[in-house]
Image 1: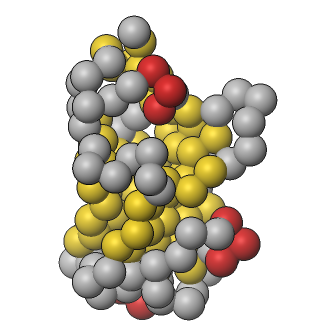
Image 2: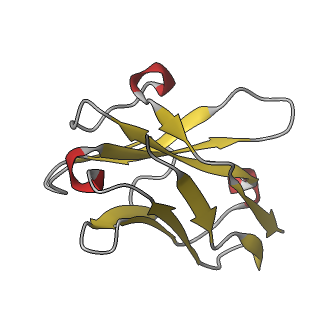
Image 3: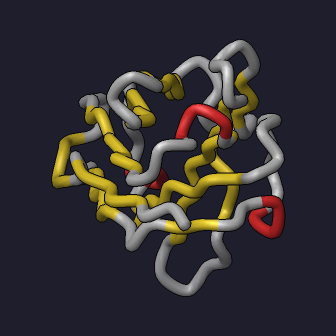
Length: 124
């Protein structure tokens, strides 16, 4: 069992930056692939970024490439999402997720555990 707790969300102006963190419980964190998803009001949950269990492989949604960076610190059981050049359309509830499979993945069904989410609001 893995418990995930996100933090770092908030209100920021367009063009600004935020760094989201996701702290995981459990001794096997380093064997999980981790992902970030977002869900805006009235929309379906969307893939944002994913990182393999080693950190050696990352995948990004086209909408965030070049602006967001996913990383992990297995010693701290934490995955991060650095969000730069934020846009109003990035406003959403951001979730982190863990996958037993280990490889980076883009589909929500690929993930076994989910956090409660942290709100990101970007003003224009």
